[in-house]
Length: 261
Image (cartoon, rainbow, N blue to C red; front, side):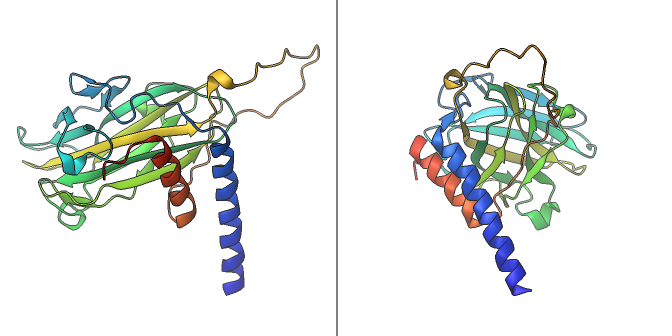
């Protein structure tokens, strides 16, 4: 049993090293304004767009300069969802930001970001895991978050709203299937509440991989087209659950982002 576990671990690490090696060979950050230092428009970082599913909840987007919730530079993006002005709310309220980026199809990219979750309840136990963060990708460059089917929950802990703890990181590999990829980051409020508030801070977002400008030109098709496998639209998701990819993501990020800590 131990031998099987050891072999599985070695194979997983080998796969992680292969992915990170491919990304490191040409690691351009194709996300624009990932550290939110290029200004905000109505509380939203430039180059980013917003979405929500409405309902009986209030949503806010803010440029946050509070030092405990900023990882890189002077600003982070704050996503705020609360029920202070309503008598109740529905299940599953969503809000977030997204960005459509140019990518090289069928090449591995490494997505990473930093942030934290805060709430008036203060802990996951007290809120019953009410506030979560998720990341999703649209492989055709679409802008409808409802079309995303591969949401991945970010395993960040929850802190008291005015007493934030340590900023955490998240990384995941993704392989685009077209020359456009949409990155969605959303806050998920699971349950109805009255008079409660959740805050999610996002900073240092990156998508590292080959630069589209440096990609070789696509050769002209042959006279008789060769059958190819259809694009599945599914990227390889590897959330950071071990030291391998997490360490690599931190190393890549630190080479490109100024860590204020």
